[in-house]
Length: 482
Ligand SMILES: *Cc1c(COP(=O)(O)O)cnc(C)c1O
Image 1 (tube, rainbow, N blue to C red):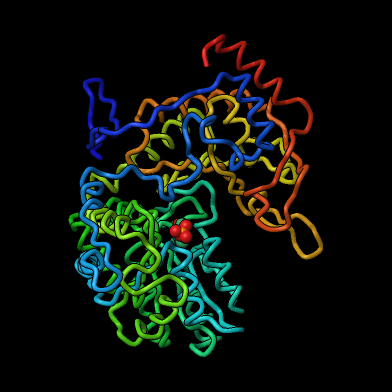
Image 2 (image 1 turned 30 degrees about the vertical axis):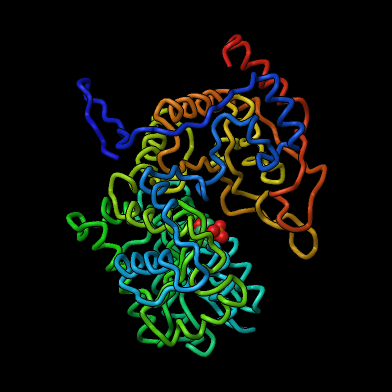
């Protein structure tokens, strides 16, 4: 993606691809949306896709694929052992990461299962910049404990700090000194830190983390699922790397990591996962679990067609036009929101634009799920599906009390090459309208609350008739316009 300057001085992100396969969308009338939201229990996970106009729930497995990816899928070598497809994917991983040992898995969390089963024991401590939901679950399941050592600036919703995904290296050093390698099998760094708004770490920070790992004899594991976003921001924001190629930055990051794993639903824009390392001993320690849980070592639960698509998708991940496509749209949204006073996570990150629901709806207490209420309201006024990342996504404690989330966010994910700028502008407009009418938005309460992962299947209802009032005002302002 290129940023282009217009005659009037305005700069806009310009798409460096053309659309050749399309999927028809519909925007149901606002009255229908009101009904659909009620049927979905005010939970955007429970909406049917046919009732959604712009699906901004996630970036997982929904990037647009390229002509070259689709072409590659046709030549997949579907043999169980000795598959050419495997050889091509292994070769691409070695070319890009410089790691000769590759283990396939069916998606990111499958890699985490193998890593956790191999390295985590009861009492293990795994320091990381920040957790991801599935990562934490696998570590805890194997008796370990996650310790988040995010740079203090990382949890500031609004900030100008360019690398909010950085590790607090002083805190890491203290923990390594206190617990040592008997307790700490590896340190995990997550690229493009997902749950704090797609925020990057710097190469400098990764070097410091690696230095500590070497000094204490502990492995460094990189979760590279959101590496493309992180690469974009290192090139944009880190002085030293300004003139480096994306391949060079990738190699530098890879050389600091003992093990790299990723969800190819994100890195690779297809369906799968991978673990790679340059150390044969580590490869051997994980290998048998792949055959046990995933499949034979040449496919690991993936379809060979998807493996071919990943192989080409990894090349795309080294292309600046491709990797900038999400972040530049997100930056555009963030700038427009800042101009009109809509509270957003800053600086702009990868993955999606994150609205700060706590500030947006400062009259809705956390116990009434402001981020969930905002997600429901945005569907009502635009048919736009976002994802709640706040208290609803937490779990109650052992006594059944609410655990209030440190941030109340509504994530509007921007999968790469999927949306056009006019669609993005539509989202901006409807969010700005909601902000101007925010006093009309109220809270939610559960009518059906599952014990685990309640955000997936839970059903809620609005407190009072605020949704009818919101729709009334919408119709007064926009008339019959959708
Ligand atoms: C999505 C994701 C995972 C899990 O990958 P799946 O393919 O969904 O299993 C792990 N880590 C990060 C940072 C992710 O974003």
